[in-house]
Length: 150
Image (spheres, rainbow, N blue to C red):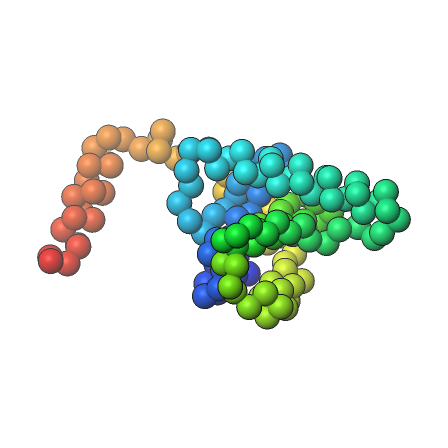
């Protein structure tokens, strides 16, 4: 199980997003909606604000940005000098301190190569252009035949 799946599989975590500093969501634990791409840019802006405020008050760099609402917590973790961001959303009633220990433990294991893998998947050209329509139809037929009947 990779680090992303470990976080997404936690019973107290509702959603996990991985984005880059170009404003693109690289991975999500839930299906994406049409406006979700804006979320990555918004969180990046929040992280810049948090870093600026921390610097103005003479504090160390912000390691996490948290927003709390009536329904839950949104936590933003900058990785690799803010080149990538992990966003974790939990219910308000989740065991916060326990979750923070787990999230911190998991994110400490993340290496640059773990993040660049997702960048490569996004940047690779779509192989569907090279497929013949007949190949696609045949692949669907095979898939339908292999499905167990209900």
